[in-house]
Image (cartoon, rainbow, N blue to C red):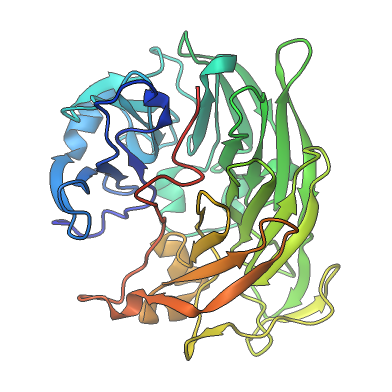
Length: 409
């Protein structure tokens, strides 16, 4: 990228399964919004997949003036051919959950998706299901606060979210707000089931380390139930006497059979069988770094789940710094890729060694029949060795599509 400190975070494609029936559409442009600068990069991956080129830059001023939004995050393509990105803030750094529309051909900013006055107090991720005329969005926090690092007192001060926002997909207005309370503090990644007829899904809540199932009721509104709880661990030599798991990414296999999520503080990736969506069953778990490794400074004094602290993770002779963070699953459900960086200023706070060495990408081999996870000992991408590095890698995308790139109509 020609600029530094943009904070590239999440990404998306210019076309996906929502464009069904239009043979002119190709998944050949990667949409890269910048979380801090609000710049949006369009990268051409079609002309030469092994040497992507910069196609266009949407400057922050265009985003600000056309939408009144800033800090773009999640990108999804729409059946209309447009690209929609969620926002986390406004140009002044306050929280504001709206949606930026880009033309799918020129990538010019067209305005906001939501009607005037309908933006949410906070924003982060979103997922839509046209068959049910619904979109649901989540909340992170106030950009000018969380960008400086994480402080627990900012939770009590109201700078972080705990709500889901339900939108009418056709009318572009909010119809319901679901307050998850303290048990749903900082709801980040949200996933509907891939089956377009299913009116349900899951959301991972970072600070509370709970997973909620959301679903449409017989009355036609939406409700939630807590279905997974990751217990805090009582610790010493840490910033607090209890350490949450900090669920930071969540995804579903393409067949909607398994749910996966990462605990960025505890350091593990978990696999749950969700054949019964109200009663997920843990069937796989593997540790990738984290803050409770056996030879680290933190001592776990009480643990409801583990009998001992996990060993350090070493792959191809390299000790893994940081922790399990972004995850991406292959379409066949057999390869789960994981990176270790969350957000640069939070990385500095919780994993300073990773700042010095750079992040990594690992491959987790998945038993997609019975459940089970294992680290592939032969796969390591060391971003500490990048030219101009070390660098911090975040989200992973498959050129042919993956388990979070497509929404079916």
